[in-house]
Length: 81
Image 1: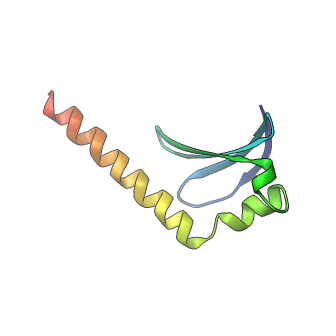
Image 2 (image 1 turned 120 degrees about the horizontal axis):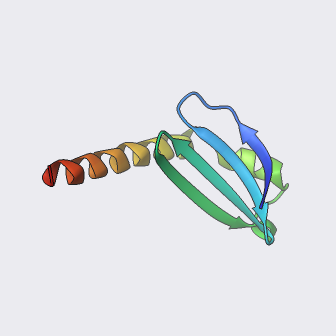
C-alpha cells in the first residue's frame, strides 16, 4: 500500500492510498478511523477524481459519523465503569 496524497482538513486527517487497483480513502480523528475503498476503474480522473468526491456534503457526513462513533464508544465504556 502506498500513500498517493494527504489532504489538509481542519477536523480530520485524510490520506489516500493506492493498493491492488483500489483507492483507499482513510479519515482519522483522534483514535477513530473511517476508510472507504473504491475500485480505480470506478473513479474518473484518478486521484483528482477522489478529490472531487470529497465535497462539503460528504465531509459533513464523515464528521457526523465520527461524532456518532465517539458517542457510541463513550456510552459503551461508561456502561461498564
